[in-house]
Length: 128
Image (cartoon, rainbow, N blue to C red; front, side, top):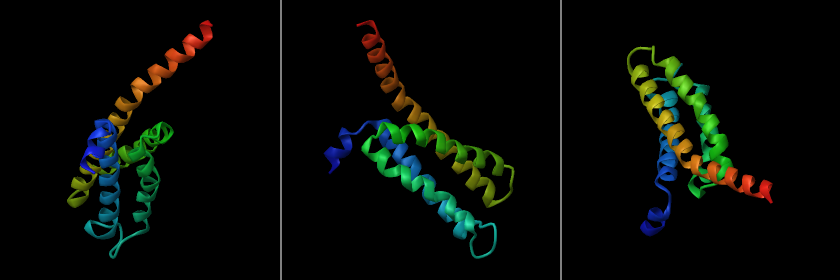
C-alpha cells in the first residue's frame, strides 16, 4: 500500500489531504467546536461538496481537479470573511483559509503542466 502512495504525484496527495482536512474541519466546526446555534447547525452541510471531489482527487482525475479548484475558492472566501470573528471562530477560520489556500495552490501546480501539454498538442495538431 505504501508503494502505491509513493507512486502518486505529491501535489495530488497534498490536495487530497487538504480536502479531507477541510471536510473534517467544516463538520467539527459547525457540529461541536463553535456551531452557529447550540447543538449544531445546518451549516454542517457545507462540507458535503468536498466529499464529491475527494475520490477524483485521489485518482488524479483532471476534470475533477479543475472544478475542485473553483469549488475550494468558496471555502477560501468563507474563511476570509469569518476570520474577523473572535474566539474559536477566528482559529477555525484561519485554519480553513490555510487549508483551502493550500489546496487551491497545489491543484494549480498539478494542473499547470497538464494544461501546457494539452496546448502544445493542440498547437501541433493545428500545424498539420
